[in-house]
Image (cartoon, rainbow, N blue to C red):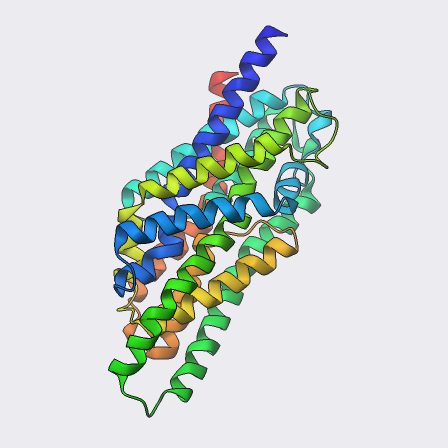
Length: 330
């Protein structure tokens, strides 16, 4: 029993560490556009993002239940805690690598891929719920496409509405509105991303026999995950902020507003449907859609291509990495 408690403690620590890293890795999702257009000062933007992430994380649990129980049944895993440890270590390693390189990859993709890889190696393919896995991956794939389309449409409409207005006047108004959209974007990030750590911790509680099902997310788990996400957000991921805020295309306040609204609508819709999506993919795709509507040639498609490649390789790399880690440690 003591060993089990000790291992469970390691799992909880790693899950909160993943959540913390997810926070500073994904800070750019919420504030890159508002910082790059100078709608908000960097420190102010980060503090606001941290607070709104915390609030959003406490208000929903559907994604946590989905991510913890759709890929595999924790009650059927004899070595479930070992599998989760390998999953979290692999996810953390990949997040740190992409953060260091300044690439806005997906923490969600890393976690999903790593969990599938660890279950495959640690328990066998029979223990993977392939239907649930495919459903989650479909959400991760289609959400950025939808965000791109919505961003393109919203920006096209805004161009049509404000075509005869002075660009200086328009951007001055939208710079103020970006404060609200950045707060909304941060809130929706919390409603979806922080729940992934909640789901993993609850998964660990179930597989260790300390909770019967994934139906209830304990209050202490919600508070711990929300706090870790908020603290991570407060650190800030400046490398990724620079990539998303300046290297895709030159963002003006009206573009930032359109991108934030587009991404937030996609993320929050997914939260209501209990689907884990990548906030990184949503906001990046929204920025690409907005940039394309502004002027197709304005988008630096080479940078965008490097980001997209990272999207596609994250799940398989994370799966292989977690499988190797499981083999090495256990």
